[in-house]
Length: 431
Ligand SMILES: [Zn+2]
Ligand SMILES: [Zn+2]
Image 1 (cartoon, rainbow, N blue to C red):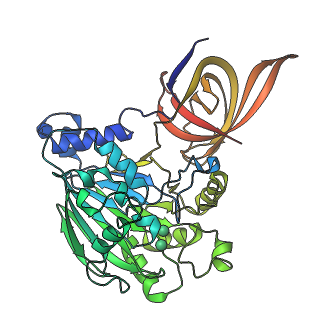
Image 2: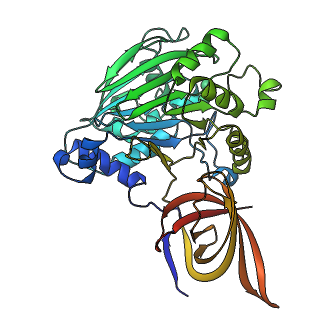
Image 3: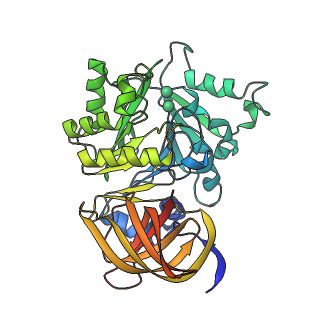
C-alpha cells in the first residue's frame, strides 16, 4: 500500500475542469484559433461553457457542513461559442474567477461583459476583490438597472461606495481597468458578439433583473432572487425561461418556508422552479441561491425531491461546469475539482447500491481501489446519476476477521473507467 499526496477523487479531469475551460477560452482568444482540438470542435458544433463560481444566497458560508455545494455568493461565467465572456453577478465567487484569470497570459485582452441582477450585498461583494479590475489593459462592460434609491449610474456608485473610506484600504483610483457602464431595464434586449441578452424584471425587494442569454450553442436563463406571486412578474419569469436549455432558478427556501415564515423575502423554492420549467418547456433546471442555513444534506434533500418531479435537475454546486451544445449530448455537467487530501491506494471488496442515470435502482459488487478520508474512486458497470446518493458497503479487516463497513456517499464526478465497459465514479462520503 502506498501513501502519497495526490489530488482527491474530485480532482480536475481532462475536459471537465476549470483549467480546461480556461484553456478553452485561451485557445479562442489567443492566436491558436485555427489549431487545437477545441477550435476544431467549435467549428463543427458551437459549444458554450457555463461555470458556477458562487451559488450561495444572502451571505457567504464557511461552515464545513456547506462545503460540498460551496459557500461563495452568486457568480456565474458563460463562455459563448464566439469566445465572448459573460459574467453573471459579482458575489464572492467573482474573486475565485479573478484568481484563475490572472494565470494565463498572452493574446489580446479579452472582452468581458458583466451583468448584475441587483445591488444586494451577495451580488456585488466580490467587485473590490476581482483582481482583473486592477490591470490596466483589461476592459469590462457592465450592465445593470437604474435603482430609484441611487439614481443615475447606479452600478458606478455602488463601486465607489464599496471602496469608499473607511470600508476598503485603497480607493477607486487603484482600479485601473477600463470600465464601461450601461443601464438596462426589464424588457431590454442587447447583443454581445453573436449572443442575444434579454432582461426582465423579477419580484424582489428593491427590484431585480433576470437575464436570458441566447447563444448559438443554446439558451441559458438566469433567474435568481425572485418570489412567485406577482402575476405580471411571474409572466416575465416564464418569458425568460421559455424553452431554455438551462434554467437557473432561485431555490433558497423549502415550499413550506415559502408559504409561511419566509413569505415576502423575495425568494423561491425548488417546487416553483419545477412548475416553471414544466410550463415553459425548459430542459434542465438548476436549483440556485442556496440558503446560508441549508447544509449539504438539506440541499441533497431538496434536490432529491425536485428530481422526483422533474427529469433533469441539478443543484448548483461551486465549481460545477455545464457544457452546452456538445455533439451527442446537448447538456453535460461536470463537478468541481481542486480539493486535495491524503489518498491511499487499496483493494477493498465492496457492494454499491444507487440510482442510475435512467432512474433505476442498482446493486453491484466491485473493488474499491482508491480511498481517502473524504471519498473514494469506484469502478462501476452501472452509470450512477451525478449528485445522487450511493451506499457503499466495504469489507474491512477488523479484530474479529472481516467486517462490513457501511458508508453513505454522494456522486461528485464520473469519468471513463480504466476497464472497458466501466465508469470511474468519484464519491464523497457524507455523514
Ligand atoms: Zn441574493
Ligand atoms: Zn437579493
